[in-house]
Length: 473
Image (cartoon, rainbow, N blue to C red; front, side):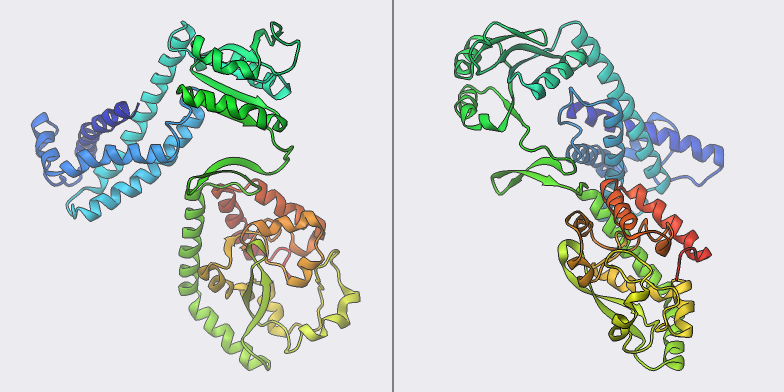
């Protein structure tokens, strides 16, 4: 499959060359370097001068597709899922290919050609994958290229697995038989397939039947029973897979990793791929840096006004709780009188929020300038320093006080599983106009449904909310 992808990547190069030439002719653009014209000779001359791109680009695309798992579970991968993985791979391939151009100092390389190649390679690979899947479905439907499975287990989860295989004949999987360790099950049929033995018979069966893979879909109580069977399969080179329903988890995602040779089964409530977190952090750095530079004059003006209108420091520093309970110092422009924290206990009876959070509309501790700063959210600009340093993100649950966390219910502590942010769903949904419980549920909704697209939507809504001042106090 990788060889076919490499060939497709090579074909994309001349295709991109001719498409680029057509675009330049129609749009009357400048001729690119080393391009004689839209002829075979012209392409050969162009390719001879850019041979690192001709060879390197397809290899980079294969590497990115391998990293994103396109070649894993090819039989059961849907076209929709494959198209998405290919799109993600193409984005990373474009970045890596651009790096190759920079490192090889191909200064005359055309940006238009590079863009055309990226789009052409993506479309050709997408078309190729679609054709391959159609051909595989046709081959499998005719009974060719079948993989014989021996299923160990006949419980509820095993039955679901068997049904999935039976309903997707295009996967090219054939169940050769079932294994059940209970007395009296031998010879009986489960979901239309016969039980052909017990666990102790697996060593004999894999040596006397055509078995391509043994899949254990068993309860966790069977762990000790199946060890010898797995070792028997390993001994004769038969691949095995284990689908173990350890716990009835409602939120956490399960996946397997390797820790220096130690296989680990991990459960995480916040599920994101490394490349997504990398992009999120990259966006945090870029936006916070741009904001600090762009708003520097405004921040200097606000600092001067704070010093002129009230006694005390320019910045309000407060300990907050961040990712997994880490504590950090949060920065804001001071909008209250000096010693406001010490006066908080006097005003607790006027708290307008339920839960451990204190909010008061007409808080007497707020200075006249502070009202304006809060209303316009200008008081939060210094938090871009926190974001640039990595303590916070642009989008994420608001960072709580240690005293608030101490009074959290157990389920509310899950909001600490993600790095806190300057803005969040709560910020753009009314802030003080919603209850504390609703606030916490919004944070859980954000964590459970997180995506880069969701962050973008919240950023857009934040911009509109800041302009209107909706919910700010």
